[in-house]
Structures are given as structure tokens and as C-alpha cells.
Amino acid sequence: QLQLVESGGGLVQPGGSLRLSCAASGFTLDYYAIGWFRQAPGKEREGVSCISRIGGSTNYADSVKGRFTISRDNARNTVYLQMSSLKPEDTAVYYCAARRSYYCSGQVSEYRDWGQGTQVTVSS
Image (cartoon, rainbow, N blue to C red; front, side):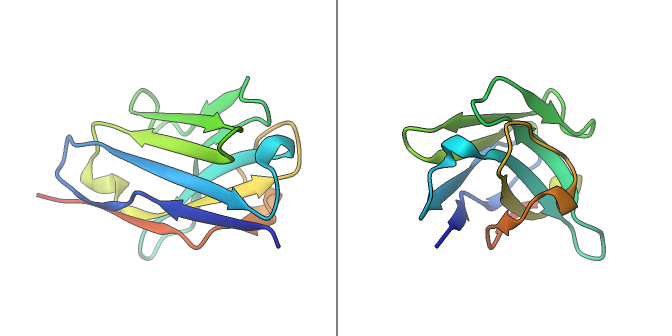
């Protein structure tokens, strides 16, 4: 059974950093583009970043460009989201999702398989 598990969330002060991990089990990530999404209380889920199947193409939401970096290690079956210069508005539950395609997408509807999410709280 295809499963995605996020980890690495937590409480961090503004300006701090966190690295989220998305580990896959039951399937190999080689055939999937992966997206990171987030959902703050009372808001819709939004795309944060995505990476193509082999990693040659990445995309970022304007709100995180220059601060977040997505990467993948197919040998470890894991995708990472390095988050730096965190702001209070980055507070949300962060989800990773898999799309069986070479190309990634920032659209929630394009992804079928989702992790359970990890909480990121940016506060002093």
C-alpha cells in the first residue's frame, strides 16, 4: 500500500529553519512527482513547492521563493523541504503528496496520494 509520511515539523522562532521530510513506503518515488502543500486554520490548502520525477524541475509559491528549497533523494525514497527565514505566516500543517507523472503541479486536485501532515508553528 502506497504511504507517505511527513516528519520534521515543530515550533520554531521567526527567522529560524526547519527541514521537513516526506518518506515513501510501499512504492518507489522514482515514478512520481512530489508536491508540498500547507493548510493554515480557516484557509484552503495551498501549494508550496513541487519537484519533478527526476528532480530536474522545481517550482515554488511566490510567498516562499528564496526561503524554501525542495530536493529529493530517490535512493532513500525521500523528498525534503528545507525551510529558512521562517515567518509567522508560514504556520500551517504541511503535507506532501505524490503525482504519478514526470511533471509536478501546484494544484491540490492533481495529486491522489497524501501524507497525514506535520505541524509547523512559527512563533516567538
